[in-house]
Length: 179
Image (cartoon, one colour):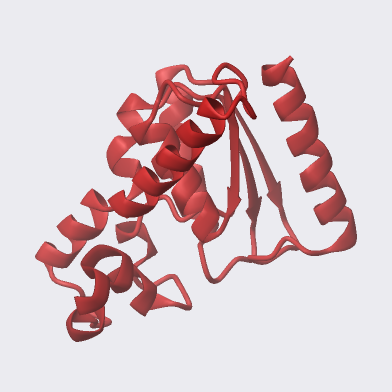
């Protein structure tokens, strides 16, 4: 994951250097793995973004043990190409410690970015608890947050009304912080 974060930050700096973006008006948005990256970015580049929005972000790999329909993904994120060799449905304490350290939740104490969370209550891929845990940690620190849980939606948040509400809310959230 550090490579992904660094790659995005290098790309952003390049776009700023080209004069195509203002460093004081950057927002970040991602869903699923993009939400994982979004929450990593706001924790590792805490002064870079003025607003963030995350749809069903995987914020804590350890919290996903026994609750996700893609358990092997955690190992790929934590161990890289060696993840296949380490996979087990019964992770050790060492696995759990590594999952925690490779998760966005490990950087939550540094986050300052106002963050919108859009979560599908029926999500089997990234259980709603991981986004809620991260949002609660930000709220406890006094970081502005907004959480919308779509009770009848899964990972994709694709029901027409939910999809519309989700992206409308993202637009309003970004306008609030980018104006």
